[in-house]
Image 1 (cartoon, rainbow over the protein chains, first blue to last red):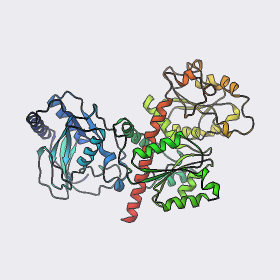
Image 2: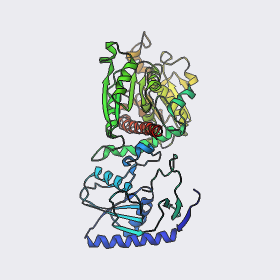
Image 3: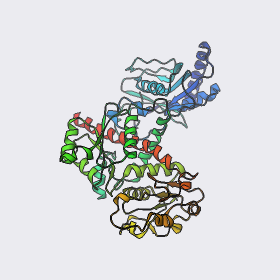
Image 4: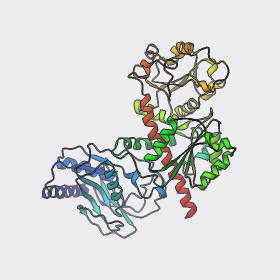
Length: 187
Length: 329
């Protein structure tokens, strides 16, 4: 927890969320999508999705995804002790989905989330919107919408903390193998 | 016993290595099992009722004693985790040809099995297998003799938490054949560890162990007194197959004294739930009106059993994986 510094406070994060909301609105109009289903990835993605869902006034209830059962590093890190049920309020078949996450890094979280969504059904399309897009991708996954693209060193990590107050913090990588930690979630 | 059970079942970081008995496990790990199960409950309601967590793992159901329900729910749980499942009905094969338990075990290990789920008529069988299994192989006790049936106890705890929210403040009555019941022993340990206010056992003297009070329970021989004002009633099955000699005058008389009827249920709290590990002897342990009534949660127990077993299997396989990783790395 040491050597962390705040990059953005609540107000700054909220203005980034406003930017995301505007871009999502524009993209939905361009693609002529009405009534999309928004899904937030636990934990940070859900905080953001709640704000975006409110701001965009979406009709369908918000879905939440916990990708613990779909992680590709289960054999290395064991069971996440803080897993929550995923909750998708309506069938995803033929729905247009907006997937929300806080930080896009390696792309592995999104790979897991896509696999999980497809175990619920076959969506018409998925838009990926993340607050932060950082370097270090290990899979061919790109976001449709981002609010911030910081230049970071390889050993730095960026985390959304919250939910109240929200903030973006930067720190350098420490040993994250201990239990109850974020379990390498900045993927 | 508690300390050795603890060190056999938990690693230094308090992660589950095997799941053999509730004895020796604290509130924290029991709560972790319940919380993890919560995450798995939704999987059964999806289009594809499977998650890829244990893909490539081999789970062997080692049943030395017959059981349809427990074996089926373990099998379904392992399959929903994407593991491959071997069902071995040992009574009908190796044991009858004279192979020892350890020989059977080592043969299966040579087939690279990652987990044994063991049911055996002898108390301590699952412990024995856990002590002799290869590194990296996890063992889950699916019932051993009169000793323990920890996953049944945990699915009962899960059912109680789902319906009552918290354990603190609850009064729970366990009714019936306590003497032969490994389920009751595990339930009593779990209920006390999770902090319920009062655990009662209600049974005729012939179906109670002599040391019943040392288990941390209040003993009742009168059904009406035993269920009065309780929040949860757990009925046990009369284990006729385990009874030697004349412990009971007749099933009819047992029902008239200890059977759960609507009239007796009305003495409990008005929102009390009724549970039973199954299979029910209708008209012996309880009236059909109660078994199928609004306060019965018996079928929900079966569904929750799958989530609990998914949680325990994945937690044990996860921990064993980690240890193998450390050895390799």
